[in-house]
Length: 244
Ligand code: GLP
Image 1 (tube, protein in one colour):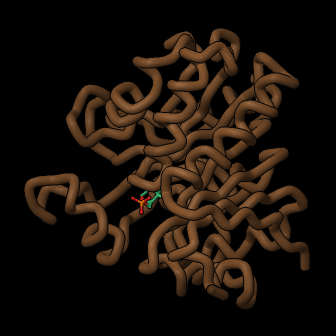
Image 2 (tube, rainbow, N blue to C red; image 1 turned 180 degrees about the horizontal axis):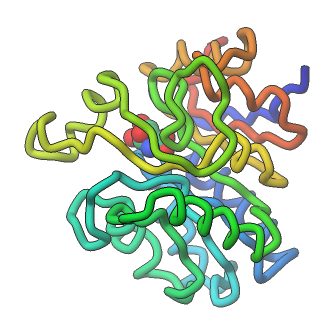
């Protein structure tokens, strides 16, 4: 069993700064790095920090390519709650990354299998993901890989669990409006990244964080597969760290 490198930061802002250090280092070494990005509230301080660092001349996104983990099925790219819109509003519109160098699974895809296969092919064409950012759901999901009896390999369609719909309804007018399905990179896609940074904050994530890295590797806790990845950095705040 491998163990993550662990950074326990004071609060969510400090988590954002520590995670930004990882991005800065990877992009400094490889200006055309391929970064895997995540949505949710946890990465927001990181995205603010990345925007500030580019403004301060410390990072240059002009050659960077990015691939997002997931997208809700059925939402148009400009839908208020789509992950594409989230990325535009919280990061892409404020940095120099080129629009054609950003990919997010297409929520409105008609041929799902073709869209998922093309997504994998694009990442491969770019030479694979250099640095993958992850958050974690309360049930241990990464991207939208929900608890299952196996670890799904590639980008695919998933049914969201009630727990995830409940957790994500805060962004919609009601739980009824939350899409019931999504497209997500597979566990195999995520594990193929050369380096992974997971950001976790808040007391409510403490239990699942403990299960993820200090429990058995089990597809019922999808993130637990990360115990088999050779280069994981866990950046969590004091509230989320299970041994405080
Ligand atoms: C969503 C996303 C995940 C994210 C999770 C946690 O379900 N698909 O990628 O990690 O939410 O979000 P938050 O950081 O808001 O707790």
